[in-house]
Image 1 (tube, rainbow, N blue to C red):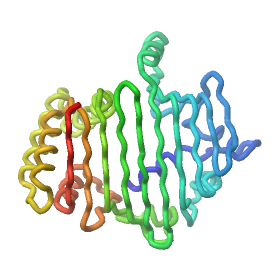
Image 2: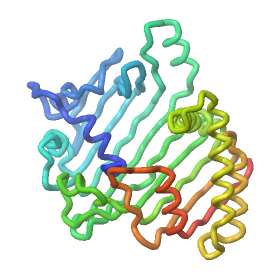
Image 3: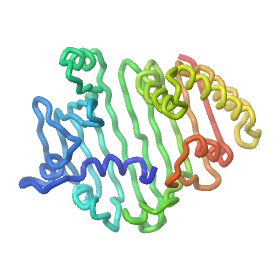
Length: 296
């Protein structure tokens, strides 16, 4: 994880070649990851761009269709155009919204592609950030995913970056530190549909096992052991009980869950030898944790 959470999205929009047209047309049409669906259109907005009826391609055989997307920011289009040359400044603010999002397989079987797409209830996504270059404070505000049938999840975070940071500074190891994290989940199937498949695939790759259930069970057991060993100064009894209930309910947590991590020292998340297990252990040792978990 060498970049803050929104930078991979910025990089994916960077144009591969110049085109003739408006700033937004040049940017979107030159991107390798935005493709056309029926009714595709690009519009120039004040401080940003809008796209209607597009496909965000996230792999060779998978993508996400969307009905409407907007992204705005402080000189954001100029920043994205120059990102390949590592500009010396970062936008001081930005926000995005995407409506009508559906997972879209790009298989050779047209029937499978169609059925998978129409069986889904569309999602909406939104988020914003503010960056103060004078003190290197990055505030990621409510990255939110909402599905009317499956629930809602949101994430906010505060990070410390080098003062007056530009892209070259962010490329340096250990340049980004996490100071606060808040995660909220209203689960009615969203966790199982969005998080569990990715988590199972990751654990399967790490463990080399063909049984994803075994990986989930091992993660649950090791997490329970780590939580039970946490000192009272890091988590109060009520929060520990709530977090243990949530972990034990995996992969089917129910109801409302909130996790709040306040770190005594910034947790570096840019190391080249990034290890998720080691990062989790460091976070638990360095954080004050507050948790609530209530069934519907």
